Amino acid sequence: MKSFFNYIKSVLSGLWNLMLGMKITIINFFRPKITEQYPENRSKQVMFERFRGELIMPHNAANEHKCTACGICQMNCPNGTISVISKMETDETGKSKKVLDKYLYDIGSCIFCDLCVSTCPQDAIEWSQQFEHSVFTREKLVYQLNKEGSKLAEKKKVEN
Image 1 (cartoon, rainbow, N blue to C red):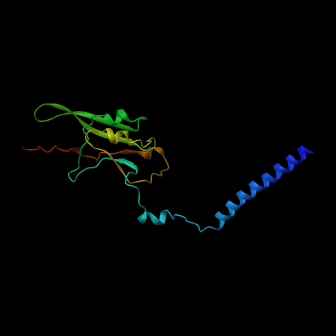
Image 2: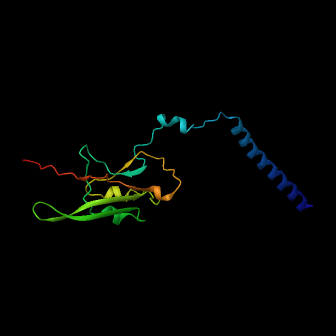
């Protein structure tokens, strides 16, 4: 007889919990819907200031960048997203120095950890607010961040 009452008690408890769940479902069913119309509201889309969309290398009006091709960002990248390809060039005085040839960034394998940006001694790279990265092939997710024909920006000498 005791097992019969336990059975009835467990069935009623199950029905009670089912009704509580259905109550929450019905309340949410009749609430007004708040849907973001994404493709149509791009002009109103505001991203947070600290949002990490994609890595960029800013260039000035003279097509100059700050990257010295030191490779610290490449060394700190945990999964090999960044490839800094440099070459040696000689200047007028005959000294040879390392110059950035290509700065490749694979956004498809980036985990957006910010180790590259935070460890760059020249502040040559930064995050943009761009968030749309949909493509059909993974090869299109590899970007060259330095522009064609760009060069290292000359440091301004501070006079005392």
